[in-house]
Amino acid sequence: VALGVVPPAPFLAPVAAALREHGGGHVAVGAQDLHAESGGAYTGAASATQLMSSGAEFVLVGHSERRALFGDTDEDVSAKLRAALGAGLRAILCVGETLEERELGVTDSVLACQLAKGLSGVSSEDLRERVAIAYEPVWAIGTGKVATPAQAQLAHKGIREWLDAKYSRAVADRVLIQYGGSVTPEAVDELMACPDIDGVLVGGASLKADSFARIAAFVRPTAEAEVAAAAAAHAQAAAEAAAAAAE
Image 1 (cartoon, one colour):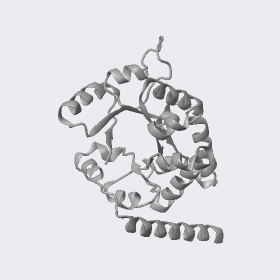
Image 2 (cartoon, one colour; image 1 turned 135 degrees about the vertical axis):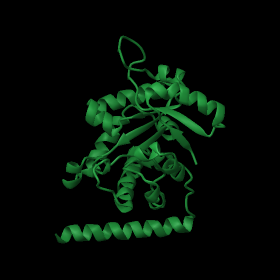
Image 3 (cartoon, helix red, strand yellow; image 1 turned 60 degrees about the horizontal axis):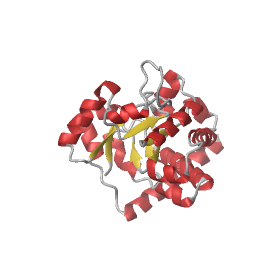
């Protein structure tokens, strides 16, 4: 199991130092954001090289809170992603739709737009080797609403199909697609049983040691269990689609 932590900026260096000493090389350290420019007068911002000097090995770009609260556009996200890769960092590109967008039935087009703009200028090799995708259904984060495993799987499947169409099947199969919608220890088994969910991006549950340990200790089911889960997810999705059509 690949495991990473993304502490707030003031704690990046001490967390990285502690993990170098006690982590046994099993836990990567990432940053929550970065500035797209490598240098200049940008008070309060941190460049990719500065983050690396503090111990960061990867960085989040396009997190839903950065988009909603700080106004990061798809173009900003693209610039940050290219800056991270250019400096030698790995990156997790976050994408996701709002409740309004989901209710309008435009989830697929929203995700496709965010992927196309966010990955603009990123080579197949960089995408395959150094970028992961995190699907964040904004409507399921801190709202009391929960995405079902079937809903999450459909979104992840759509992302993988987009990668296949725009890059290649080899790239689509290699890129890790994580789920980041209010992940809990109780939900992780069902989520990770879905064939296109490769990992989770944990928020609030990571602030409690026992919850995070339970999630981090997950072991992927056998191939037979994955097939059964995929069939169940497909059946549930079909039932939901039929119910929606009948309304």
